Length: 203
Image 1 (tube, rainbow, N blue to C red):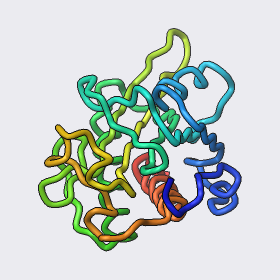
Image 2: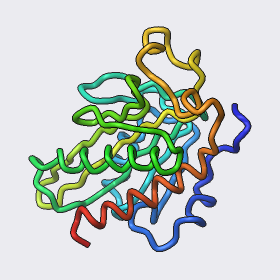
Image 3: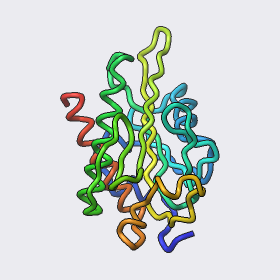
């Protein structure tokens, strides 16, 4: 485990008042996939804006079912429950929104150049640092909902990645040469997602 504390739902909520995204926050030590957890919770009475973080995912996934490596305590792995009133066919708008917000947060918070590789990956130079997975869920006789899964490599060293990914993946710490405070980065990212989501919905 690195020098920074584990994520805390209480600490995160204390720093992001009066928001839609992050109005409810859950931090799990380990789960299969945060998208799966949010899908299960959506069947209950959880509000739009619920965010579930996991310190480790055992079956994190990216686009087209690809496995997403989620090294314990080294990144931000989380999913958001949204009810955006968009048609299922418009899910690309959510992917674009989330990827752009992640890239902008990297640039503004970390002062690193980030670009989007269409449709859902965020790169620094020629290496992947983050990814977005949007799943639209239709329900009979009920409004559909969306799950926005985000994975951001923060404090991994090169050897934290499997050998087959070491030449194509990176982390913010590798590029910067020092580790980051994941808590502060999570706060910044949630605030930016909340603000830009309101813009997407036209407030």
